[in-house]
Length: 383
Ligand SMILES: [Zn+2]
Image 1 (tube, rainbow, N blue to C red):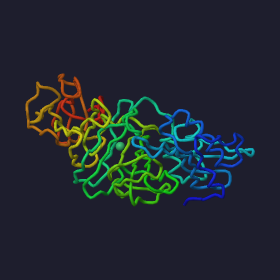
Image 2: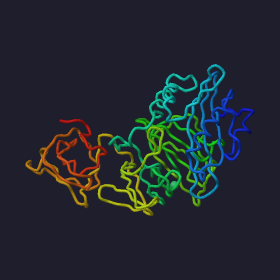
Image 3: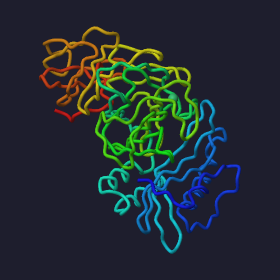
């Protein structure tokens, strides 16, 4: 539900105008004042208006989205946050996702559902170093498993050429954009169109922009694969889109993070030499920007993808090292499930040198050097 307040018309403030009063007794003014502060850290070419969208208000609490809309120009995109506001002694205290206060306010806030309180407290905490060495996402590509979509843009910034390169552009197939992983969905723009953010577990969230015919979502629980909208050219919060696509971005702990080296739909994204270039790897199979990515579905947290670093097969052995006999082989690109790991002989593959060996669910062993798992340590504990 969107609560339209009488002052709404005053909420779309251009940055050329005088900022809102700094003595906010109205929640809209308080959030707008915060947006004006944040705008200072955003390039002028990316700022158009401060948009405050109060989605829920109960007594002394308010919750919604705060957006700095973008000019209608190529390479411009909006910046947005979920916000929480709490009134005390006549003034509103406001916190955006990623602010230290946000996680604390989310815990137990009556304006949030119980699942939201937990998830927003987790995802809303300030960002640590990227990924902390763990690149597993548990996500599929944001469309139907079994379809192949065109990667029209490789890793690039949420706003185009800015860093981190959090985003990719996808189109094709049946055009239906689906949640990459389960979570809670929110429409970000004031009119509810175009831009959806899904807050996932483990601090991750994903953004989907330029959607057409998207769902209404204000904390809606979605599963992996839930329909979010069709690819489109919507620019409700600004920017431009020359052809129908989804501008898909990865976030962690309330900030855009480099999408490279993360796995989506069993593809590991790779940066190119410039924004919008790059490729994706499935085992040794590489698809460059402009190619099609087949959606294999989400890789499980105890699964790996065999990467023979050049194709072919990798030997499976009866123990963790080349001193043990060969008991079979597994082909490049195959998904395997790891039951536990041990140290053995040292090998070098695409992703580095390691003495780690992984015992597969069939009891055989494969060197971790020839497997993408998303972590450098034991994926599922030591045997
Ligand atoms: Zn894009």
